[in-house]
Image 1 (cartoon, one colour):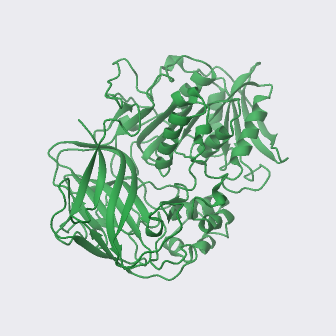
Image 2 (tube, rainbow, N blue to C red):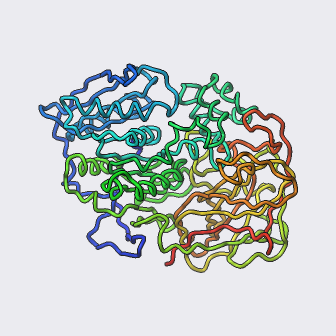
Image 3 (tube, rainbow, N blue to C red):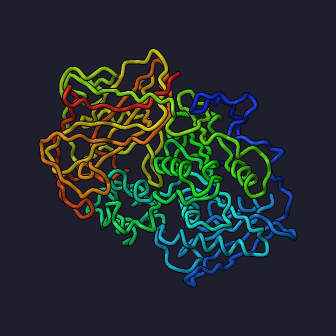
Length: 594
């Protein structure tokens, strides 16, 4: 289903804004609406199948057009998909909107299914989206006002056509997406997004086989891993050939620096465990501050729930925690209310909500906020420490706000032939586990360092961006460092909340020339651990894991310093993580006063 949000259950929660303002008691939750003010199903629907829409270069893209069976002109909703205009519930949902007085143009993107031209991921979406906007607005059934729908890749098509800026595009609603293709869809702080790039980029998008196993991901070199799941894939190999953001290859594909060009109101729903969360938060801040119109700046809205990429409608994150009926959202009605306001002018209050609605995990409630990060945040250093053996959950690793005491370091061996497996997290479109999972199996490993606080006496809320300052040395010329935040329940289950990775050769940034390490030298690393919102309840513990792999979400660092795309030789790395007065490794948590 294109919006991945279905049933609505009641959700009533205390809402507190970023400046400590408590909303009026009669102010509804942002994801709620007055049912009486929603467009009602008043029309029969007529479908124009396989309508050919010309692009500027003469290529024709094919769409099905769902129209109210009535005279007159209506606002149009465009969704542009690589997954077939008649798949994933598009036909049903398009009829649903058409019954309520919208024309829905459901289009296969260039080179997919019936549309002409050659498909190359991302490359043609901005111009093709703009050309589609211009064509739709001039049709006899359109009143000149256009909105957009769809999430994930369909959300990327929305953002990029909005950046191109058709004057007819006046309302946008999407989920689980971002304009930052390089730093989120493809690379994360130097590490290649292998699970996503191989299984989705080289597999799903080209109809390759649907079953993926360890051998597919373990294949070396990475450059030819696409052959294990089907056939050579041009864009998969191009992504590997261009590992730095300042490479001209990414221009016209990755638009994280151009979202300020968006002039239309934009609603985005996403999850704390979505693969594109970091990019979505970046887009939000840029549009709120620099959007191309006051209307866009004042009407950039974001909802973040306890969801994965595929579970924005559900109550579970993919693992063992059920967040209950509070977590369920009806995307169809949410987006209908949004477009009703900006395409039909219905005064339903959707333009008067605070910009953010966050689901606070742990307490499992929603809350409004006015800005990101929250203005009242108290950034607090939690230092790692041990008596010299933090290896596994059986070790003596400690986490706390006092400066480190005890041994000055912990050690482990990272073997790329036996990487730490991905168990949950911000994963998408792969066969590996995603979302919130019990990490006790991972914490049995000697190559995972584990640091925990004592059981908490009072609740501790962590809402906002998380960073790790790590001092470490290695015997290798290049290696990876992974940091993960977990919530340990009184029964010992350890649920992952968020993590981050840094590839050592890119420790100075994604646009700096790759710089290999001097073995044995202590380096300072900053690990972006993305963001979360969770209340650690009394009796729970805050935990940090440190290791050197998260596979196959990310490719393995082979530790040799060779090109990650073409290298095949592996070496074990002796890893040393420091936590002394001179090298006080710590995680910075965004603590929210209570």
